[in-house]
Image (tube, rainbow, N blue to C red; front, side, top):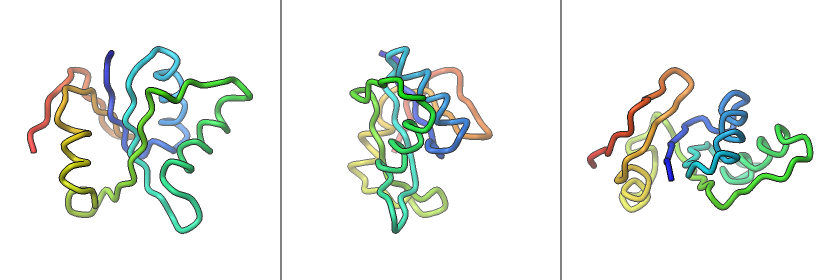
Length: 106
């Protein structure tokens, strides 16, 4: 199963991209900022529901992590970073797409 990491995953473009990836059985790691109103996971699910038009999506291959892009280690624990980045994966952000899987060293 191909694996892709997406930051800013609850944005309009990324949510549409994730919807298509889930339908194609990708393992999707979604990096989302939670806020005082909703957790990162709830923000991601809300964005996907808005995009789905009532279509049922499979969420088994979706893992959502709360992160802060500008903070050291994305404000994540070393264990979370290992789980996310210690396998080969494609990486997508709004400005960058790595089209060959890389294993990132921590």
